[in-house]
Every structure is written in C-alpha cells, then in structure tokens.
Image (cartoon, rainbow, N blue to C red; front, top):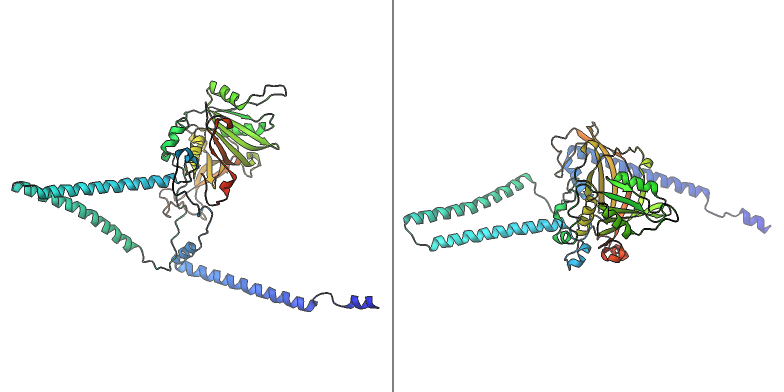
Length: 432
C-alpha cells in the first residue's frame, strides 16, 4: 500500500509549469533577436546615408589581438646576447635617421647664426655692408620660407581635417596598415660580422638533403627537393650494415663537393618533426621543429609544381634573430627567379611561428562583386583597379619554429641562441 502511494506522488516539476517557462523563454528570445535585427537594419540605412558613421563604428570595434599588444625590449645589453633582443630593427633605423636629420638641422642653424654674428661684427666699406645685408636677408628669407611652408602644411591639414572631439573614436589605419615585407638591408652590423657567409650568399646555391638515421621519410625528403631549387636527396643509410655517417662527416663531405647548405629532415612516429639547416662549410646550424605537415596532393584544389625557380617572400622578420633567419632562407634560393613560372614561396612569421606556403599565381580581370586593390593609404592603387590575382596552392604546407642556433655544426660547437620554456611566460613578447 505504501509503495503504491509513493509511486503516485510527483517526482519533479509539473509539466504545465515547465511548458509555460519554455514558451516564455522562446518568446523572450524571439523578441531579443527581432530587436537586434531591427537595430542592424536601421544602422545599415543610417550608414548608407552617412558613411562616416560606418568608419566610426569600425574604429570603435577594432579587435585587440596579441599581435597588437606585442611588447619590445626597452634597452639592449651585451652583443653576445644580441640574438635574444626583442627590438624592432626597422623602428630603430627610423629613429636613428630622424636623429641624424635633426642633428643636421641643428648644425645648419648654428652655421647660420655664426654667419650672422660675423657679418654683424665685421667692418667694411659700403659694398661689404650691402653684401652682408643681402646675406642676412637671404638667411632670414630661408628661415622664414621654412616656417611659411610649415604654416602652410599645418593650415592645409587643419583645413582638410575636421576638428576631433575628445569623445571621437581613434581613426583605424587602412588595411593593410603597414607592409609586413622584411627589409633585409636593415641588418645590424654585428650580425654581418658574426655571420659573414650568410650575408654574402652564393648566386646559385647547391643543397644536399638527407634524413635522420634509419628514417622512412624518403617521400617527404623528395618533396623538399621540389621545394628547394638545385637540391639533391641522398639517403642517410642504405641498409642495416651501412656505415652510420655523422652530421659532421656529412657536412665535410658536402662542403668538399661545393654544396652550400646541408638540410636534415627529422622523423617522429613516421612523420616530419624537425628540420636542421647547416650553412656550409662551418655553420651556423639552425634547428627547427615541424608541425602541421601537409603534402600538396592532400590540399583541396592543389596544383602540380613545374620546376621553375620560385620568387621568395619573407614577411614580418623584424628582430636581429628574425633578420638572421630571413637571411638563412634567402641563401636557399637563387637570386634570379624564373618569373615565367609564376611560382612564389612565402615564409610568414607570426608569433615566432614560420608558415611556409607555395603558390602559383595568375592575373585576371576583377569581377563585379570584388573590390579594387587598396594601398596603405586606403585608396585604390592606380593602374590595377580592374586586375585581381588568383592563387593556387602547390604545397607542401608546414609550420616551422626556431629552437636553436649553433655557432658551428651541431650542439657541441656552442649556442648563439636557444629557445627555452620560460620564454612563453610573457605572451606578448616574441623573439622574431
């Protein structure tokens, strides 16, 4: 009897109240979505009438990324640790150039002041006095003309630009804000003194590709030879009883046969896990880790390489370590690419990860639904308004991360720079 009463008692909420709560929540959700949709369309109509509203909204809604929060080292120390400096070489070069210009302007002003003083103190006949007055007037006119130009520039700026209120959002730079192309000419002098062979690469590099001992990555090594011009793959060990040559012996063998670079593909669980690049004859030795390896045949819509020497694009290498790495990759490719092949290899550095891609490009007419190419000033680039670029990825696709730079061949030669786990504690500081 007791059991039947217990089973008849309700164990949860009554279905009637549950259904009411569900219907109330559904109605509230629909009303909120309708309000958002009405506000979005209303904002769209207002922005079509006044495009400045769209610019203000986009300026307010700039996403704050880790790249935007990137921090740089304030001061630099001993040049022995120079590769560990997180300093923007391009920014330092601009500051140095501005300082030199300001110093030159101050020297010119000092010379003009001395001339005025000498003219005022000097005694002479009427002709000399007239000449002195003319020189003074010329000097004064030069100074006045500079100030007039500055005034004109400031007046034109104030005339063209509308007065900004304190509540106005900051103007967002046009996309792309700045060019990410690496300027290799800004390499510091101490890098050129430490690694002179890297900064004088041969016009025709010759590369030897091999693998780790008893490796199975023969197919991947052949793919690397298609990515690197003038490269040859040789197996590390042909059979179980073959002589196990060390990296130093292979480097000596390669340098004696006019090879400029030795590349060793590392393996982990039958997948590429590392890449060692040795600049011959005596280093330096760069060790990278490989992740996200995808060969070209597995890429959707991939193309087949044609064997032409590709163009090389190096993006966002800004620190001394980044410039050294960029020079290493530059030494792997000939200085004269075959433009008719329309092939480009891109190495893009972002947050100390180097993304390697290879594409074939073609120039085509712009479709009606596409926008024109804009420059850094946000305006359409003249001459290419109706031209767009089509890309087809050839592969392979992979990601590199620099772990160590050795002075010579292998670890025993000593380290110029080494990645350590504590470097990731500060998320906004990057080494390249």
